[in-house]
Structures are given as C-alpha cells and as structure tokens.
Image (cartoon, rainbow over all chains, first blue to last red; front, side, top):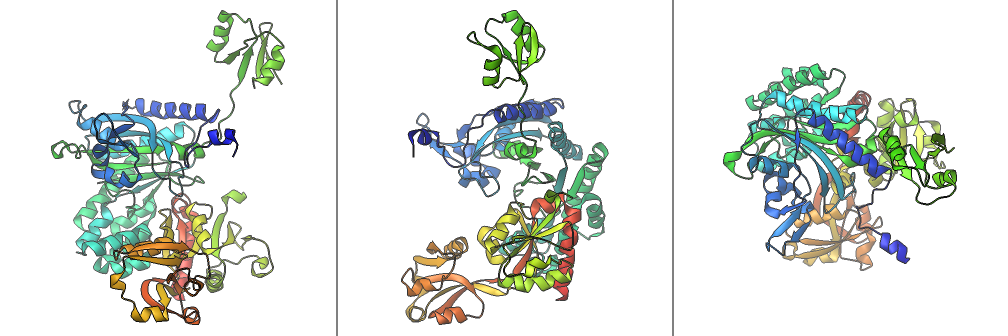
Length: 384
Length: 220
C-alpha cells in the first residue's frame, strides 16, 4: 500500500462526501426541515454523545449492541454515541421542555453512528431528519405526521411514494386473546414477520384462522380496510383497526393521489411502538426512506412524565439514492481585479462567482477551475 | 416497458430447480427455450410474460438478490432464510418441495461414546455458521465454525473437525462418509419469497404471482 493510499483509507462503513454531493445533501436537509418548520415544528439539537444509560433506556435497549461507547475521563462514566435520535428528542421534551404547552412539535437533523451496518445499509454513519409531535393522542396527530413525511419527501423531489401503514399492537392482540404461552407467541410473531402462512397455521392454534386472514389482507388500503371490517377481532385489535381506517380517511382527504397500503401484521422494528405506525417506500429504491409511528415519550425519564407521541425519521442515505444525482451548478469566473462591488452584484443575482487570485488568461483559468461562465469586459460569456 | 420495470424471479440451480419448474409452469410461467439448454451461458431469461424475467443463481445468492431488491421474487429453502434472517424477505408460501432437514452429524465411532451434555465447546464444519452457532448457543455450548461451501462431509474424515452441520435428505451421503446424524436442528422445505419493498410498492404486479403459485402449490 502506498503512503497516499494508507492516509486515504477510512474504516469500513465510513466515507467522505465530496462535491457536489455534500452541497446537495445540505440543501436537501434544509428543505426537509423547511417543510416541518412551516407547520410549526421547531428544531432542537441534542449532543452527539450522552450518558450511555439515557440512550439505552426503554426503546433504546434495542440499539445497545449497535452503539459505540467511550469512557468519559471527566465523569468516569460510560458514554454512548447516538445510534438514533428519537430517544434524545423524547428526553428533551420530558425534561427541559416539560413546561411548554402540548402538543409540542419538534424537529431535528443530525448524524448517527452505528457499530455495524446491515445488508441493506452498509453505512455506519448516516444522517437522520425527523419530526416529533408530542403530547397528543388524536388521529389528527397520526395523520399530520404521515402527511408531513410525505410532503417533505415530495418537496425534495422523491417520486412514486408508497406509505405502508401498520398497527403493531393489532396482531399481538389477536395472539394474546388466544392465550398462547410467551414462547409460542414469540414464535408466532417471528412467523408473522416473515409472512409465513404455513408456520402461522401450525403454531397459532385458535388464533390461526384470524391471523391467516390478516396476512392475506396486506395490500392497497381501501381493499384492506374493507376486508378488515369483515373480520371478527378481539376488542383491542378492533380498536386498532378502527384507528387505522380513521387515519386512512384523514390522509386520503389531504393527499388523494398518495399510494397507501396496509400491512396489519407488520411488527418488526416497531416492537416499542404503541399505535399506528408507517413506513415510506419509493418504487425502485431499495429499503425504506423513513419510518415512524406512535410511542410513549418521557417514560424513560420518569413514569409520571409518560405522554403519547408520534413522529418519524427519514434516512438520508436512502433518500439521496432516491433522488436524481446532484448536478453541477453554473459557476461564474471573476478575473483578477474585478471590483468587490461588481462581484457583489453578480452574487446578488444568484451566481456562484469564483474570484481569480492572479492576473492571466481569464477564459483558460475559468475552464481550469470548472467554471461554466466567465466575466469579460463586464459581460457574462459562456466558457464552452 | 423498460428492462428496469420488469419483475425478476430468482431461482436456485440444481435439484430445487428441477422440482420447482413444473410448479411454476402450472402457474403460467414459461421461460424461453434456452432456459432448458444445459450448455447455455445465459443467466437471465425472458418468459412468456413480457413483464417477468427469470434469473438463475446459487441458492444463497437467491436470498441475497431478493433481500436487496435486485430480484423481486424467488425460491429459497428455509435453511438459507434461517442462515441470513434478512428482514427484507417475506416468505409467504411453503412450496412443500426440496424436503430435507438440517442436522448435526459426527463419525459413527464418536457417536457411540459421546455425551453431548458434557460439551462446552465444539468445532463444526458447515455451510451454515449462523444457524450452527445459534443452535449450540441455545444449549449453552459455544460453537467454533469452519465455513465450507461444499463437501462438508469430508471434514471429519480428514481431521478438519469432528462434527458437521449440513442438510440431510436420505442420509446416504452421511453413511458413505462414515457419519451418523446425532441432532436434528430443523425441517427444511423450499419457500416462495418476496422482497418486502416490492410487495408494498408493486403490490398489484407481485401479489397475483404469489396467489397463482399458492394455488398450484396447494393443488400439488
């Protein structure tokens, strides 16, 4: 390995983002945050590193094996580098912003770090952008976050979105009503995650007929809701199904053209969620663009601070794959000696204007520095 | 329709392919003539449906293609699905073909005097290191796996290790190599698998295929 190569090598799953992608990513994040800001979501910025136990409380436990840790020489305590930001936002809402009126709308953007990438996401560091709506249990709140995620993605130009709605308490309520032992119930949940009908039939005993029907229901929202209505469900599952149809109606009203599907048995990744959840896909983009749903916030700080919340997280690595490649912007070369007033004028008109630092052949220099235009005698010429 | 818009069905080479093709043909999937030519170097084939292509790959790679969404549907044994446990794969149908089991085997003379309850550590040659580690961990035994891609049954005779974890159907291969099955890990059949995102974003195209294959599998 040459010296140059050795200095350039990064650890697995980490990378340098270069022009024009780095500019592009920054612009995309600003526009995503702009959409939530226009709906009254205010940005918060938690630190990169926190005490390990606050990052691992409650739903954070699932991230434990995937979190980098360092010893803090100052406090002599173990610190964790965040692998996800949702829990940090919930902590802020329950502590420093406890006194603010509810519902509380917060947004955030930041990088997270994971010990290991997985198959679909080899990146160990990637950006998250999200919004949380804390302290309201209404179906209007559920619909608001779904629509916000969709509007944000459409604003930046992601096409052919599909939102998959699920209710992670629905199928477990059916399983619980059948009185299966915890270990058997766990095996049924695993079979449901794989949509493995034959295993569900074999394992779920009297819950099997209903669960198999639920597996078949997966698909476009309208047909799925009609089929759900016909099913005889235990009371708790019935309430979840009702909430699904109410939220679908609200989302439909605001976004009639959006492709909506329902998956009443999707549980994987929503183990800590308590109500309506959703995943956003785009046709021909592998993996999810984002996901979100209802959970209990503040519980990890103190049980008395528990409040119902919903929100979503968008994954910048998938989103950037879903967008057309970043184009190179037009750049204007200002030859050496161009007056500051003139430079200000062109920049004021929106040009990216690069100043020459030495006298010489202006057109040649413009080409060498990848400028598309050059200022010659007060007029803009195409470099060609 | 651009090439990018076609649905891709990934099929494993070998024995499973011979068993699954009659099923797929009954479901209305008729590949181009070259598909049955043993000499062909082609890996991707058109079918009687202009919206569907078939690719052929090794069984482990079928799961990888489908997990990443490079193929939208596929056929894979649950041995492969257990080994990878990809969250992005749904396995809605048990095709009830390719029946076998995944088992622990060891040399006949070892099996006679061995007491599995005393193990704390075993060294195992296998194509399935994850399944093997999980199986032994569940019993409190640490398994050190030597990953092989084939000819696993040779390992004990050549002194690579004393035990193997592999697929067993008739048991003839084990017997020919002086091995005996000592523990059953799971029953294996082939499954029809679907990429998670494809099922959501292209439901109208993918689900009719799932239903048609389900019908013929039920009738079989």
